[in-house]
Length: 485
Ligand SMILES: [Zn+2]
Image 1: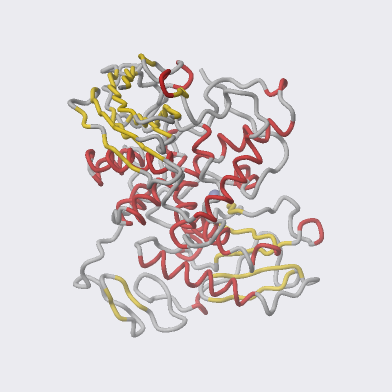
Image 2: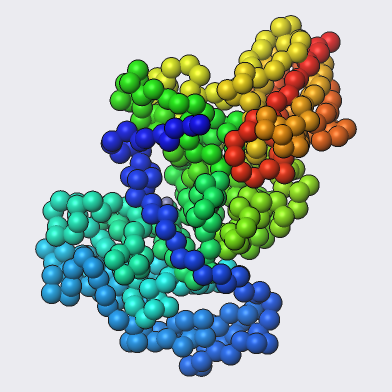
């Protein structure tokens, strides 16, 4: 039995406080995504026009059928009133802040972001927040820490008030300048909408809440230099199941310094955010339909989001894309820009540098030239869990031909049918990175040979466990035989 990891009592990094602040109680209605191809059954009110199955409403009107004008929404705020706070309404949102402060000029920036996000999310089939469908403005509080009358526990995040309506809290220092954070939190606000059906009974489904909010931020802000700042946390524990965000084993925090505890909190707590990179890889690099990815949060009745992806995108394609994604991560996350990667590397080093050996484990084996011969099994602790991967690194300085033979156990440690895919990544100082797929002869075995010259200094053998198994943390064991000529 694994003990739940407790985060150190301090904030860390840009996302530290989000982790503590996320509230997992979500609305429970059971609508599906609307199909996007027909206006036949749609009638738009108030002179709205139907385009691809969605009503485009005249200025000021909102709602699925343009049935709501802003004037029909009511203000309702738990943390103040129009007497104690300044409020501005725009579209379906009400923006509140302490009367002692003036945001009259800059609020237009946030209003535009929020209106654009709403139009974008409505356009991909995500309905308005639950407060809207109940006839209320959705509240956004811009706060000043201890210097205003709003609660001091307000951070950057989304909570639910006593009426069950979602509200967003934005520190004033981020509210008008940090588009990434607003994208992420705004997505959470819309996760309260009817149709959002989060599987609250299944622990393996929790990751999708943060992964999707972060996916939205990455996808809509993909050129921003800080959009992928957390991505390298995957390197610390690529073996973990896609949905796992707890340490591999019980961690005794007593033996660690405060900074080391913070680093551990970052490695594991941030993973569910970082796994957004896989969703981003699907939609923005492989052009998987966005509906197939966000649909994972609409369909939580009996299957987990990861099984939804598997069923919807297809077992073969999803396995291929997962393995490809892992290989591109190993190749230095070559689907993001160099400056984005540099920032992500700084973040990783900042947290991980001083951790004792073994907590962060990018490679299960690291071998050199002639020593890269023999048979290897990963230590129990680092064996890949479902939809996790291992990397064996070979440092090379001579022309050689390496042959890797993967021989996986046919069952996971708790009896699920195993399935592996593998790729080789070859990197050199002067050569372009090469990717070589391993031809699998069945679900667990495959062999590949690759010839390299002396300038190709790094070989990575990437083993992905991609079974039809979507909960739990059983391991998928394997052996790799390496030959060198
Ligand atoms: Zn979040």
